[in-house]
Length: 83
Image 1 (cartoon, one colour):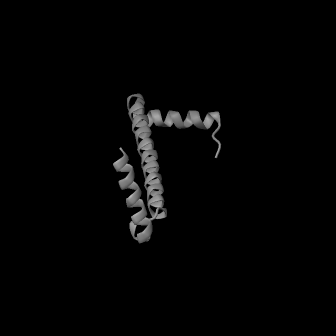
Image 2: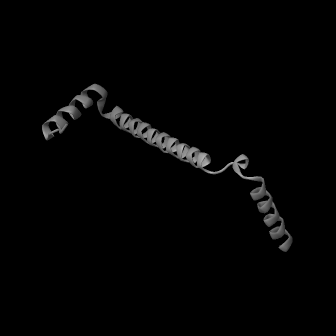
Image 3: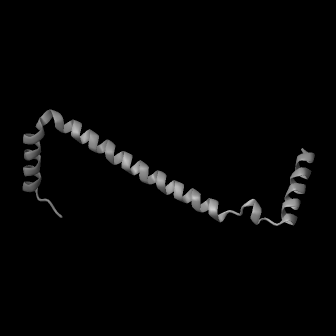
């Protein structure tokens, strides 16, 4: 949908008649804040989804074998004893 110059001028003129010159900056500011809040919400949802995917893809303790868990504990104890 392309607006030409005359359509934009007509829309601006109607907005001035409906809201007045003093209310237009307030409306533009609230529209910008709403847009920013929407984008922030989308970004947060994407980050939560990414974190959930990472959580599902990393192995949990119940998926690690007993031998691997014992090896890991032994390695950590040895590393701690060295320091």
